[in-house]
Length: 158
Image 1 (cartoon, rainbow, N blue to C red):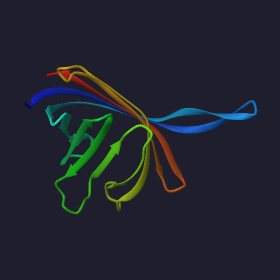
Image 2 (image 1 turned 120 degrees about the horizontal axis):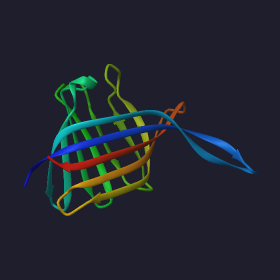
Image 3 (image 1 turned 45 degrees about the vertical axis):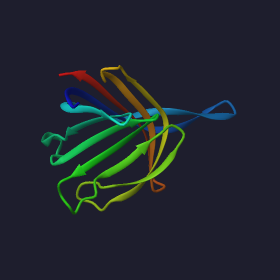
Image 4 (image 1 turned 60 degrees about the vertical axis):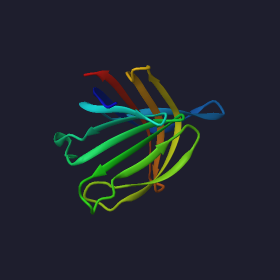
């Protein structure tokens, strides 16, 4: 059964730096960007998977895009659908310890291949589907761009 939910979606992006530490190096995260979205969405379960969907906001310049999160078997699949047939959207699956290559459509640019490595996924949704999902992953594009991201999805009653 589908139900309306309130969502708080936080995406934080970091630059990973290697800093000398004795004879080795340690990773240090430097905050680059953070964004929080408060919106309404829909949640439902089907075939042992939990689905969360919402419409992107016009204020962010991403109207006409629907986002779907699918939680299943210790992974999260993130799909972005667009109404424009010329744009590919995005489809990536994040599972700890797995490296995936996905195509991503950047607005006003050709699509690009991204390497995505998932460090950690925490699914703390209760039996009613409320709570928080957090995923820590690294995105690499070409040899020049590499960022660490933490995505948090908080699901609350509407």
